[in-house]
Length: 95
Image 1: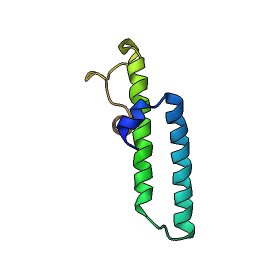
Image 2: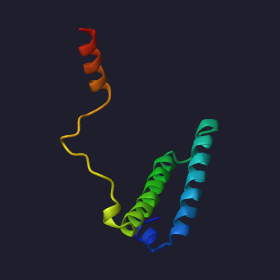
Image 3: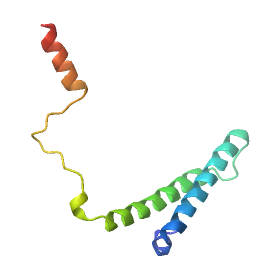
Image 4: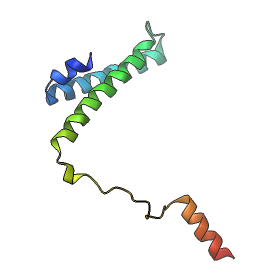
């Protein structure tokens, strides 16, 4: 299905299409394990179709949301946390 066609569909129809494509992908994966697929490219084509549907739904969601509800952006003054910070703290305490 083309993106232009998806943009014409309602949200409920897109969600139904998403469910149908997910089920189709599940069936293809099961078929790939149990027997040889007639067209192995169907797996990647189905994954791309799922991504297209989700992209259109997300674009609509972002268009509907006002810009003021966007989350805070990360400024350069915010210290990074995680592995690096934890390692630095561990080194400082071990000396």
